[in-house]
Image (cartoon, rainbow, N blue to C red; front, side, top):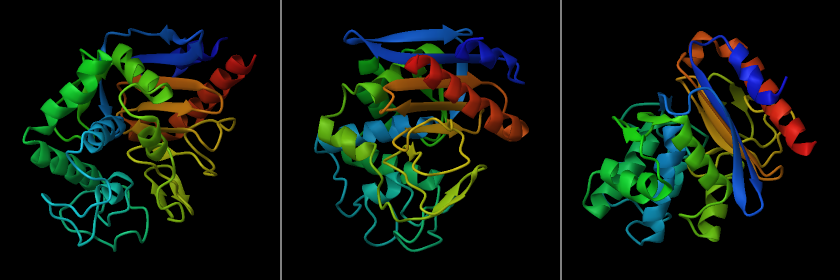
Amino acid sequence: MTALNTVTEWPVDHVAAAILTPEHGGITVDLVGDPERRYRLASLSKPMSAWAVMVGVEEGIVELDAPLRWVAAAEGATLRHLLSHASGFGFDGDVPVTEIGRRRMYSNTGIERATDELAAAAGMPFEQYLREAVFEPLGMASADLRGSPAHAVWCSLDDVVRFVAEMLRPRLLAASTYHDVISPQYPELGGIVPDVGRFDPCPWGLGVEIRGAKAPHWTGRANSAATFGHFGGAGTMMWVDPLADLGVAALTDRPFDEWRDEALVHWPAFADAALAEARG
C-alpha cells in the first residue's frame, strides 16, 4: 500500500492528502481524495498569516525587531516575539501571562496582534493584505479568511498544496527572509506543543513549528530535525522536510481532539511512509 492510500483508513468522514516532490525544476504532486473540497484549516492558518507579515517586513511596512507601534503588548515586544510564541501572551486573552522571551507560550493572540500590527501599518484589513500578498500570487483561489488569522482560513487541498510548494521553494520571500522564518527563534525556550507534549527546548520559527528533537511528535520518526510546518485543531496538518526535500499536507473534517490518540499514530506513520517512498 502506498503512503497516500493509507490515509483512506483514517477514522474521519472526509480526507484529502498530498505529497510534494521537487523534480526537474518543478514540483510533482501526488494526491488522494477530493482536491477541491474546502476544509477548515484551523492553525494551518498561522503559517499563511505569518508569510503575509513577512511580506510586509520585506516591503518595509513593518519591522521584525522594532517595538510595536499599533497594538498593545508587553513593553519591548516585537513581531519576532509575536510570530514565534515568545511574547508572553497565553493561548487566548488580551493580557500577557509571562515575561517576554521567558518560555514558549503557544498563542492565538500573538498571531492576531502581529497581523493587527501589519494591518494598521498598511492601512488595510489584514484579510485584504493576506489575499493580495499570499493567496492571489500563489493562485489560492479557494482560500478564504473567515475570522481570526490564527485559525480561520478555509481552503481546498489544491490550494494548501500551493502554499506547501511555497514552503518548499519560496517565491514570495527572499532567501534570507525564508531562512529566518524556518530557523529556530529564541532556541533555548521550552514550552508546550498543544495536545502533543512539553518539550525543553521547544523550537519554533516565525509562524511555523520546527521539529527539532521533539519526541514523540506528530511528524514521523524519520523526519529530520529541520522539518517545519503546523497542525490544526480541525484535524489538519502540513509539513516540509528540507533535508528530504519533501512536503506533505493532509486535511480532514474531524476535530483533532476527537481522534488525538489515533492521529498521533496515523500522522507519523504516513510521514514515515512518504519519506521511505521518496528515498526509494
